[in-house]
Length: 352
Image 1 (cartoon, rainbow, N blue to C red):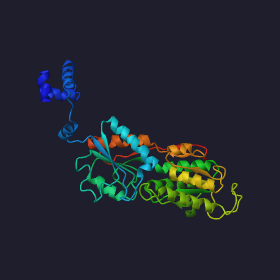
Image 2 (cartoon, rainbow, N blue to C red):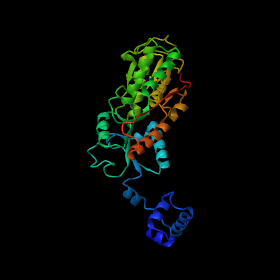
Image 3 (cartoon, one colour):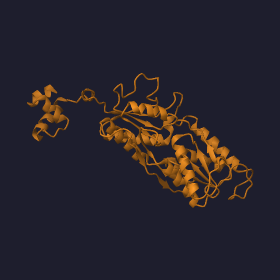
Image 4 (cartoon, rainbow, N blue to C red):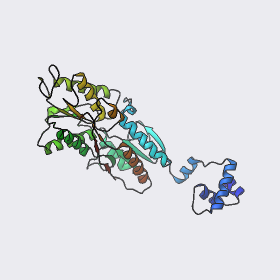
């Protein structure tokens, strides 16, 4: 930079302001400096600049997972979220660091904020780690989480209104004349548990109930793993087999054993797709015999047979909000524990 200043006949500080776009440098001077810089092949050393300003221009995105958990990125919701976050960071001239190791893990000596590798951390999902996230966020300011919001959690959350989403899906089935509704998901999962609460709310508002036999529990502890798809399909097959003892169901006329239902509120699109496949294998018609809703509006929901009615939780907007929030917290613009809860929308398709 000193060489550029000497060749342009200005001070080093003027070169610094000109190259960083400072408004205090006269236009003709800036042009002369840029011409000299271009002619000499000068490039700013971003690492040095970041070190001087005590910033990294990077954000770490973590999908908390146990070491043995594989294929996390195969989940379409996570893939869509990462795509949105990457776009938003690129527009803010920041890099994305990707990890599956929780920042509170004893496997790493220093997390990315302490070690100076990232200005902030975005966590996608809460799984069984809400207490760990709470403790970690109390120690570090620039931490934002995509997940469900609970009043007792004092960390920053960006997410869908999961209770309202569950209520919307269930109310839609009720409006379609369904009265024997099953919830298919994992109540112990933070977001899916909130969706179950919304399902119960809609049924209660309609004077209906959700017996425990109609809560079909799937195993989804933590992020999607290599076994998640198989577990969902196994649970869906069991659901379909319990619906029939013989033949084809025609709006309740065939003999049955197990749950008596005509609608399924699935806690995710992947769960709903497993239900569609199992019902089809069992000879049931969707939506004539059983209507099905999902949650997430992933690409596969639009091309399913039949196309899936689902809840749009606005993943792309969520990714943008996460980036904006964590960078504002890192810059001291926004205080911690600032929540952004996005209103969900019902997308009606042929499965209902």
